[in-house]
Image (cartoon, rainbow, N blue to C red):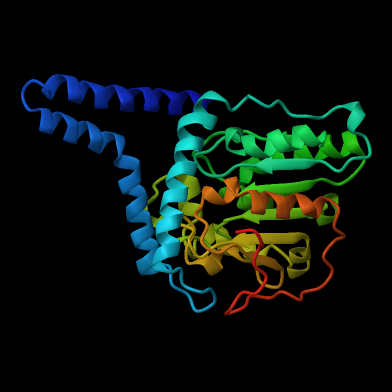
Length: 319
């Protein structure tokens, strides 16, 4: 709830600043007033543009097809909408719109545990929770705190959620993590050392091997997500390759936060290519949600038939 209040306050200050600039300067210079106000309102679009420029310059990798100019433009527009929807609506004002659905009537149904990423809260999953509630499917969406703390302590929240869901349903849950949330799941797995307690672990745009953009972050968890960070190296060293068969990793060549794109993949696991999707947009893509929820009824992936490829062929349909 702290993050929701903070984001709501920032949105109100942001809009108030834009209106104040228009009001103060309007009688001096209407052009200056509207230009300044528009710059404040359109600031996020410009920041996203810088992220996509960085992706284009520093995100190339022979393992994943480079996003075309058309894909990047479409991803920028999609991410702008997804970011407004997430950070200006769902997270600050409606993070508690859908309560966790976990009761005795859900016994025998496999549940879903949803874990958000950096600078997010459970509100990012509102679209997923709406669908799960309509299906009568048990689910839990977590709020991780503190927002800027280290990643490892969040493993306790994952442990509690998996324990509660398993007790309520009698089945190991499907656990989904977006962005940093996937690293939280890996931190839990390193502590619990019991992958059989989950049906699947799914990551959406998770910097499993770090991301170029994290070098500009000054918080502790951002530093842990830097490429080649000691924390990531220790995590990889302490994670047996046999655990990878429980993972399904979604990655995109238009991810404006996690790049190079191959860093969102795990060696020897079920890596699924979602071309042309940006970072937050990936959560809001119906085809991605459908592909993840289809795993609820799928048997555990047993082989290593999908190692990292230079040309991905296992892309998600419907995109």
